Image (cartoon, rainbow, N blue to C red; front, side, top):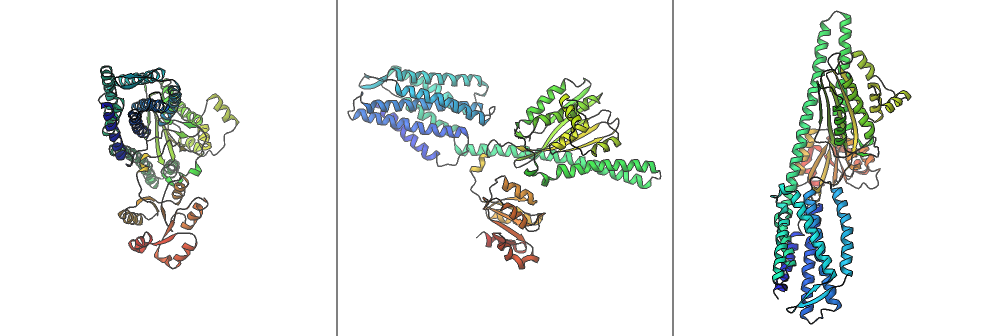
Length: 591
């Protein structure tokens, strides 16, 4: 009778846990899904055991089909609990070193094995023994169940031993409990065979898991803290990048000012001509930074040349570093720096990219006798796009200004001689520039004889998205995208909308709005300033080319076009918003 009470109490605890756990919003992670299954299996196991007690107490024969079926279902629940708990331990252990994709594959493969063993347990016979008035099962089915449970526990213990340095982590508390409870259950049932404690142990461990590592509120805080760290890291990366870039912009500007002042005071026409050539070269470098690197409006998904090849940029750079380290002379400091903000996987022609970087480094190694060679990889990320900024700098013999200008003037396609060089891997700077152009990228070079060379390459790549942001599932706040090149109005309307509880995102480019919609970003409303770099009506026409686009678009108007406000609604806008009276207009529209 004691076993019955243990099971009933376990069932009550399980129901309470389900009432507390399932209504709460949770992180959409694999380990949470597995834990949800564990709760469900624990509940079923307790319910089936209570049902089997009911059958016995109502006079049901132990050899009856009903009773044997209830036992087999109970064994199935036991096996399922141990299996899913083992998978859970694997997930929390390998979570930092294994991608979710690999974990999903591992789970699917092991699930097939679980189904096969489950079928064997259901098909094999069960023997019923009467021990002290209790009907205890034995036979092949029970033996297979015990063997599988033992194997799972051995696997979990081996995981524990391999991760002994992390034994203080709270995520292993349920594993310690299982090992301890398993020992207690085996010892108690050897002394009191009629006292069934398996379900009670399962319930106890499942409840402890909730209070240690599976509490949704704690998980939410962990995810928010993780998100905060990532945001801080990204902000630091951007600050460092902007600091370096602003210094790179200041340097040519100061040099241009210095050379132009010298030219104004210079009478020698030859020196004036030399100064003009240097000013021209510096202007090219400055234009490259401003137009091709910093101008985010050019980073459009339509401009990206996507090659159906997924690659890991960090692995690619590590491979290049290992190869080139062996070729660099001992008296040369070879440095490789890659931004932490680089996405894990990109789509692109990794072979051509590798050849571009390799060949650029080959030229640096060839013409640098001492000093340093440095490879830097920085990125700007915009939604599902990544701008790679590759810089190779050396302290070698350099190139004369006239040759640099000749190189920058090259605007040709790859020819047969270039293709032969690609085959032999004997690629010169001219060919590198052509390859970069073929990849849809930008190339610039800054060099001075006996003072080294700096080559900058900018290539846009598509980011391979592995999963959606897990925190997206939490927010039911309505999202509004506001686009205007007037920053004062952007600040004002953002402040007003946020006070009303909306989540507001800003943009200053029309193409940026179009890209975000094409990339399936979700907005409840879009507000467009009529005076964007592209008129709002043209943006709306472009958006409505997609028949699935149904988001209400509101146009923001200046006072001087108020008299034709109704025409904008006739042209397809959901409503208009007058800038001069933002507060009342927002109240009117969003009422």
